[in-house]
Image 1 (cartoon, rainbow, N blue to C red):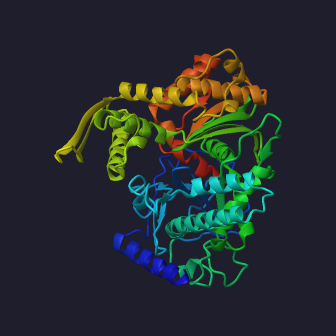
Image 2: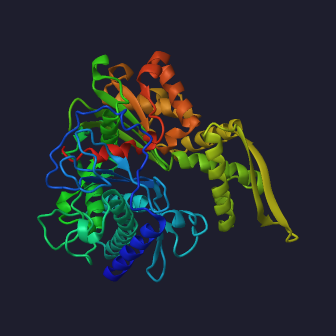
Image 3: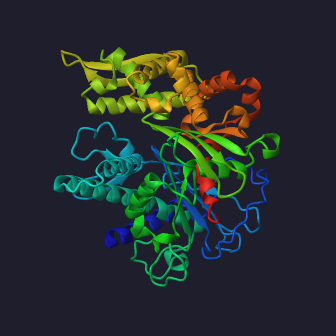
Length: 526
């Protein structure tokens, strides 16, 4: 692994020189003079080069960097003064996020990020499928919780296999991303900005530990907290319940080789990071205008959707409630469009009925591109054209050429919600409103699904819309007009249009999907 690491470092340097990436000014969509927040300050004397946050999402990974205001690290990252702000770091392809995907080949070589994501469906039935480290961590956590106290040898062997796969996949995906981010953010050569062991895999360390290698930067990782039971107590940055501790423990074990000592890493719940970021960038209403400092955070990711209540009077903020549903988010809209195309082209009900994995991969790519056009608001109808998608009984080529409107997509998506809520596939019944369920009001579209989930939050937490400071909506899925309109309609019925206008906040631009990672970078002093 050390030889491979050295080769990667040399290749990265050559790539940066060839493409002129030594001095990159990253545009985070926020005017440098507009954030106007001088309240943030911290003593990060131990980490002279600042803080780097890593948000391992269900679909994408994002990395942000906050330089230390007390040090002049170099010309690239220096921005002296109290008004330091975190910035999202672009990857080697110039993207502000990287697909959370990796392929581990039989010979041990790997492909990650965009290269791996492009083969998710194509490799779905192979011996070397595309792995998602977030999903692997979740699966490992779930299996360990289910098998606690079981000393069966077969079970233990299975768990060890999952652990090895998770650790290898997560480290081999995150390490190159973090190395690239550190070099872009801090700049300079390994010899000038890293400690004295160039062959070490360590990326994050402190100056007091000579010879271990690594940048003198504190790593901060976000994590999804577990669902709250009605009897559970609130948690915060400093108090984790058993399920949280297990997830963090598994995460730490997977990345321990790139951090020295491991204790310098911080792990902070995603909803708390979102509120930190929103306060720093002044997107929330003033606390004085509401009876409570509590913020309802709705995070619509690629494959997960969560609703949380964060008490935000003063750091460290406390997580009062959290509910998360898996396999439901922005990617669900893509799957709905794929199902619609499969009905028209293959004459099957869902994409899962199609055995042609390469054809399904092409459907996914085309659906994703079509949604970008529709969700951007530029088009209400798109034409999807995929030549040579299949062949007929006479081995003649078949081409897909189909127009899809936003209204058709919305109807298809709501049908998906309706069909999957009843069998308890998307949302467990205990995360839906008991009062609505008892009166026979089962969710049958996206708006009613959100209404039921939000009411469940209020039933469990004892709060209501008017005890909140605000509702903060974040995540890549929140860019979709379908999710945005459904949430506005839901809160409009629950609390009125004035509440929607004054307290429901959709951050603009890149902030809506980068708020969590930016807020995490601000958390070094908590």
